[in-house]
Length: 183
Image 1: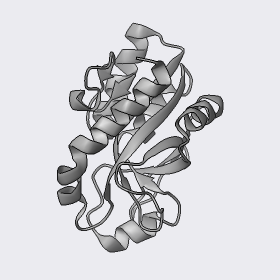
Image 2 (image 1 turned 90 degrees about the horizontal axis):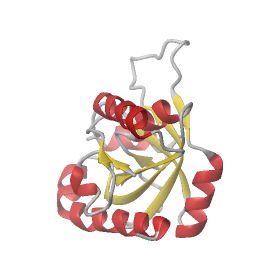
Image 3 (image 1 turned 120 degrees about the vertical axis):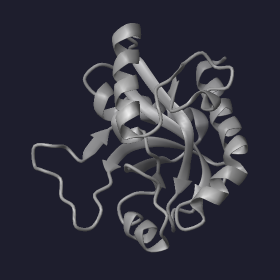
């Protein structure tokens, strides 16, 4: 079990790997090298993209994470802009939690415009900073997915909503992880 930062783990046995794409990639690499797990589940909070129909506090399981490429940017062909979760693990988690499988958009920062949120909603249902990094690092070393609780709607009010709902969403993600592990 890994999370971006310690409060998302609560009392669960796991490791905080770091906030954001760079820190999460490095932290996940360290955790995998030291622990050598067969399976990795990232837990945390996320934002629902417009039109996803996801309510605050609801649980989702990540099937795929896309690197956010903002207008005016491009991704060199050698760099993958998508990272897949382990399908069997994601399906198992979704079934046990009665949660939908989703595509996540992961960027350097949190989207703070309604227009950009609407653009991202064309290809993803959720925004979460660390999913792409963790799945990219884990793909050749362990079966991996993420279990996330919705804390906000992505857009201009996202940060205020996340602050208002963070603790409740963290508790929901921790409860989902406990349901998966029996802890």
